[in-house]
Length: 223
Length: 221
Image 1 (spheres, chains in turn yellow, orange):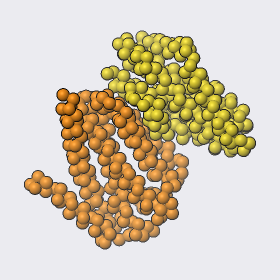
Image 2 (tube, rainbow over the protein chains, first blue to last red; image 1 turned 90 degrees about the vertical axis):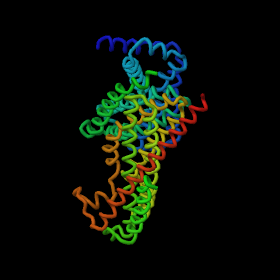
Image 3 (cartoon, one colour; image 1 turned 180 degrees about the vertical axis):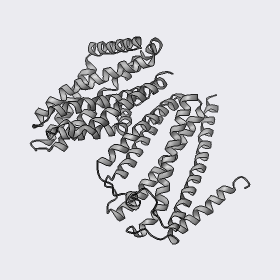
Image 4 (cartoon, rainbow over the protein chains, first blue to last red; image 1 turned 135 degrees about the vertical axis):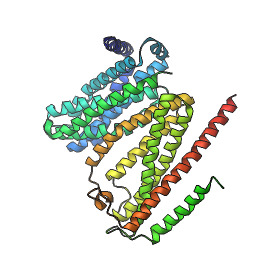
């Protein structure tokens, strides 16, 4: 058990270092998020937008940023032909855990950029941060969990870029729906109790998909 | 002829159902002549569910035993399921135009069947993006099981978006069947006919896909 966790951390650290050594991918993902946010901000212009639409727009930006960035971690292994080495060296579960951790942290880091810009650009006021932050965190964990397992699948196909969003969206609908509902409540200043059922869905979705991923990852990873 | 008797029987049976659906059964209160879509729309929806369930079962079997004929069955069931999902959507949408005065208004039932169509469109997109049959079988099976894991969430989340106007909560609010006996007879008869039709289509599709794979393998040799 402990070696398993330690190996996953090792894989995480390897990916972390690799990504920071060539900052190209990280920069691209960060810029993509900023650009999609500014595209929305420019197209809305000076309109005062109500919370339901604001929270939908925020999650559209987060979803597409995730789609632009979260597949890279598996695709890189296949492109640089390092995947087979990993297959020989460690158990499949450790690979999944390491990459999952990386993607969760990557998406949360992206939101540290997106959320403040969103508040500034779209002139949002009256947020209940005590509700907003848990919704964002749980929503991102759920979104990156489903994205990570799909990324592992599409890394082994041709035509990766287009497939990623196509395969992820239908499965991520419950996440998007509950996250939009939850952040809508938070944008209107509602407390945690008002969106407890959304948080419950996000949490249980993460747990179910995480477990299913660990069970199914063997089949994706082993050739 | 000897072994095909049930196919002829099915032909006669379905003809009887169609005639009975239009001439024999009374209409339900408030739905008028549009009641008659019930005998085709609901069995299509049932075959959709059945086909996708069978597809998921064969996906599990493939992952456990790694024999390609399980993957062929999973694919065949999903293909037929997709066709019946489209039939369900179209018949439902025509009915909705008559009763709700719009072809599409994101009723929970419409939303959930739309999700199902999206999931299986994605499933076939994934299949077409992989060359190697073993790898295709493996990844497609994993995707279809992942999709299966998210279904309970869809069932829970979608009804919260809008209220449903779908007649099944209106016709049977206490989850018992309140149907005229004549309606019920034709309804159940249609269920049986559609199920047998599914079985026939399924065996045909499996035969075709197996032959295709056989020919491809011969060509490679």
